[in-house]
Image 1 (cartoon, rainbow, N blue to C red):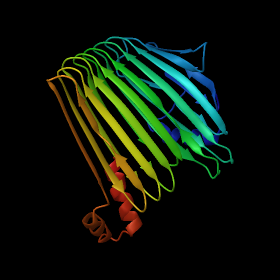
Image 2: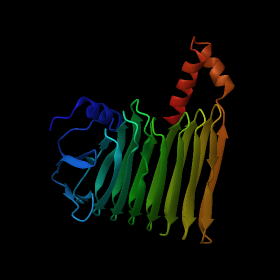
Image 3: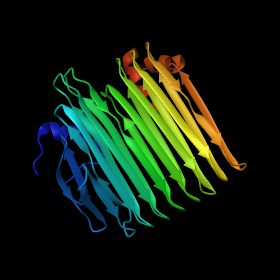
Image 4: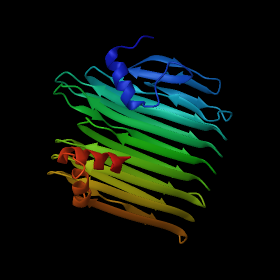
Length: 306
């Protein structure tokens, strides 16, 4: 189907690898699934009992992708439930995310509830980008809920990025790891003006020799407020590392609350957190190259969030 200019513009930001109406894909626009396609190993089925889709990924899928972006260009509240069923041995990248283009004075909000059921010996990468734009005064709100169940010997990589423009977000994530399962999380967040962002994450390492690496990087400007609360729960012989790094600017506020909870004598869990201003030496060095202070700050922030 032909997409309008605003939709195309938002898609280019939240799906940098390029959204195409081919292979396995589903585009949700203003609360409606407007187009979708299946591939040989990936099947997308519309739910009958509530808004959303079921994505079935065959174990024969190797280095395949599925794109399921959401775009909202009209005010209102959209709630969607997406479930992923990933068979043993599958190798897949799932590109999701939501973009809001707001021009009105009413709230535009998307609540996406995603659940991942991952079989054994699978390799899954889930990329979720959030972005908002538009000159409207109505709040642009995104509240994702993510539940991930990782089977034995499987690897799950979670990459989440809040690019800019989102007035308020509350992210709730829960991950459960079976024996020898591995989790890699990278969360990147930018807030400015009077925006607020809360991210709560529970990772339970239930299976023997499971492991998790959780990295959060954030920048807060203006009078914005951030809270990041990751919790690693070791219920068996396992390894986990939680790292939170933040740059604070202007009159912003950041609370970083890494929590570790050992329920087994062989659970090895480490956490670290750091919050600080932009390094003056880095700023000075870049300014000697002819950059303005604003340009130098932008370069430092871009590299920090990379």
